[in-house]
Image 1 (cartoon, rainbow over the protein chains, first blue to last red):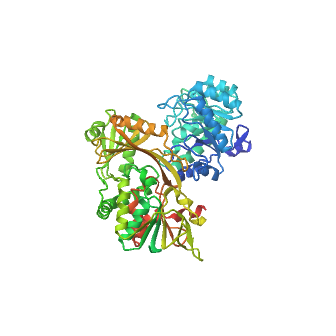
Image 2: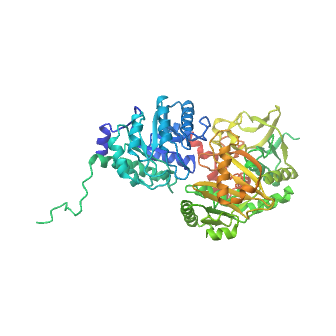
Image 3: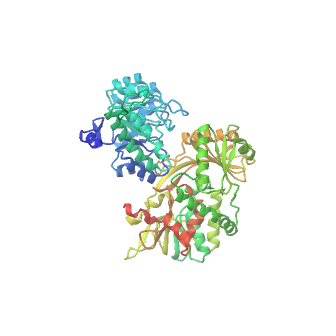
Length: 260
Length: 377
């Protein structure tokens, strides 16, 4: 099997110096219950899951953090809900203290309607967090120039959006995602906008190193089923990327001889 | 005071008091131990009895419980009004779920389709139809779903009535903190030890301490219920005349809010859901989000007086279903883990614990059984 070949070749995602065999990173927002969330996370096969640290007490018993720890999934704290670099840096530091991890998914939003990331605040926070010893994974728009600057600033990955958070609109500008992938020396993680499995597969076909999603699974009618679909879609997209797609043609080309 | 009872309930919230009162009505000798009855989640709760308008994917079992309990509410309310001598402000005019933006309307249509598929009674309304029912709604409300069977009640009045009703029916109220459980040589729970050192014996002890149910001293590990506190901030506004005729729930740009009117002009606006442990601080951000969304739906709320702001702790469980029934240890039953539905589920909770075996009740008992988490231990 090609899948095994990829695995045998050591096709791990290397992020911040750590290896992950799953290239699907999950978020936890929007799940109706912890049990449903747990089933979905298990079905997704994820090894890394991001948790919003605002309005979460890391010491509280029975929280989502307990679910992740119980399943051996690495916790990636995020700064969702922050509007300024100052808030994001503070949130990241509190998370580092509470969770004993120096990883952070940096998310600084510009407004509540679109939840689009604010590039200037994000860059400012990224610089400060890198200087402070964090492994910084910034959520950004699909902007190749900003992605390059964040890589130069020392971020461990870049996380361009496919579409606004929770919108399920898929990848609105595949061309920009390709440009980011081409130029990037750090992993590119497609973050936000995934609506269904084909979106996740497309992200991987475009050359992304991993996909991060939450709502597409947690708000599905059957979250566990969608999680399994996403798991396979990421693998399928990765395999297709490695296999190489055929060129697009205007007219048909017979795959078997047409003339005797 | 006798120091032995048939049923001893630890925790005087709506759930515990309902079990105690119903047991007393059946002629059992009953006591409730709580230093400050009704001061927990029951004090914060809005009292929506709205299983239809709150249904979500993956939660059909919770819906079944909610519908079964909603069906019990009219008789429960009538009997409690009689025994408690107090109007509960129990009302059954339905819940109107409204959508604000186009995305919210799409979500509402999906909810309407789901509700319809489940065969539940609900009516899809246009924005104008919503505003004919509720003229104070913002003109920008795009559409709604009227769950005509949903009801509501004032939980603070329910607690007051239950306390009176319990005592009228011969039940005892022990206003003391329970320090721990007592057990006999065979590890059967035999009652409680109070903070004063005094003990109270009972044939059946019922743990109904809400979010605190896992923290009682003397609980054998296998009987510790998997509950966690889920913080909810909620505010009570007041106007001279009611500005809504029924409960209104809305999604405003993806964020949920509800408004519950009372006969005396009170308007309850709730509620946040936060995983903050045992934290009951009221925050600026929590209130701002409630008011922001409430004002979008009903612009007139900004003119109302703020009477009360409070943060309560819901007893959440991993699957959002309550823990009602015999625990893993003899002599101890649970009536906890009701999360967002404690008031709605109170009549059913009492029936599940007190009624003899029968088809419908037994099926619901299975859903609520505290033993369902045993395999995970």
